Image (tube, rainbow, N blue to C red; front, side, top):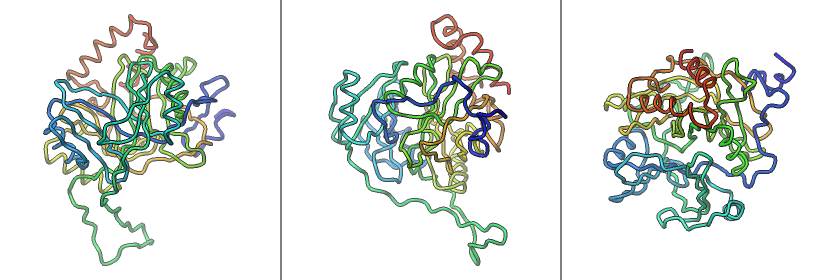
Length: 377
């Protein structure tokens, strides 16, 4: 260890930043968003999307011929908005501002207009565009959906610490009810430029940086980024961002009650014939218990439970990126999860690698070698 690692030992990363490395936060962000609000998608078949969503654990908050809103059991806005369209696409991400004044401040700083949101949602929003061309909406004052009945965590006996007597454990094999939207993972060809944009515009702060083995001097290639709520601890990451050959959605994650709920819900999905991508396991960065699934349109979605929470005092950790380093326990990361199994998506990503190497971005031959080492590690 070096002198920079002491503050991180036993916390979340063996190593802290070296002199001159990225600080992981902006000194004067325009606003500090509070959390994710929702994600937006388009899909051609809303019936199929709703059937999977309900099996995954969402509750339908709104359904029309052209629109589907999905929610969790926690109060607040819907987690996912899906609009009917000829093609399946990821439409963008919405963040919840502290209040209307933050939305107005962002609009003034970026030259954008504040617009009323649809009546089904309520409130106002400003639409921004990140350096990759992705839509980022910042919203406030929406209608608040009431909390729904939630699943109850199991009561555990640990050795001589007996909490349950004359009672059995029988977690039902049923959908793992989504409580809330936890995070989204994005890939960017101009990773550092995009990272800085999110830190400066939205006040997000980095929990952990990853770098390619042997390339730390070139800087990070992935960051796990959380909301800055001062002394109030927030999710280890609300956004994770990685360097890659295309600008795309990677996956989104939704919190469920506990491990039993997650596992039983996974068995429910498996019996219905849905595709598990990877799981069950426990991550290293963020510590979440995870289980990844493919929806019928190919989007990767995650059930998670028991994630880390950090307040604003914790500085970023630094670690090398490896496939084996994605989990503390669980099965090895699958080819499907890593995006290297034979599929239309992997073929598209391979073509993008070739194209990206000839373009002006951060994904060059050295970075490609680093990425290939990750997928084989």
